[in-house]
Length: 251
Ligand code: C5P
Image (cartoon, rainbow, N blue to C red; front, side, top):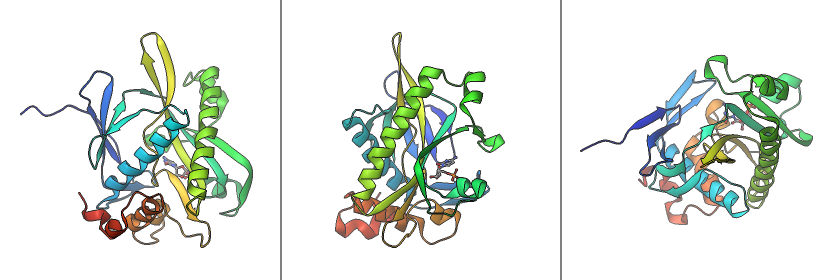
């Protein structure tokens, strides 16, 4: 039987050719990496949780008018998405200091920032995804000025939406990363939120205890990663109570 064509394999996902032109199947792996893949582990069930959580965030964004690449969920690990041309930038939005901004600017982790801060990194693993300015982006033609205006607007709308959704379930959205893609409809091009939105790409802290419920659990060896992601999924209503303990075995 003919196997579908693999287009790309990344650190956490595999992309396959979709059933219709312009579509792609995005498969969520259990592979977990940190520090530009210097730390690696297979964490059973992580892909299932991220597939489900990313679906929830992407469909919620569509409902408030933020365009995304998401079309539909296919199964526990796969979703059908629009094929898009990924802009080679990681767009990071920060509400509280943590991670590289704390290290770079000497701000204590958890300090509330005066306003959401948007940063851009150039997507290149071999360079460690360096921080870049809008000047670099314009000079090297990675995105046009109009696209940068749209990207900033999208990033802040995603921030408002995700912050509110998390706040409602007692979680503080510290920061997150998104990727933006160009989708072509004939001669018309539009930007969409692409890739994934999951606890792999966000920092999520319990509001009361400060407990970390994101990939920092893996980065900093703070405990069981799927327990943390299951807690997020459960609070967001994705896990029937009696299956909460079975996230890793429910495939
Ligand atoms: O490491 P840093 O503090 O710059 O990360 C900011 C946010 O972006 C974190 O939520 C992190 O998980 C996410 N991120 C990501 N992929 C990267 C770099 C950062 O998802 N390559």
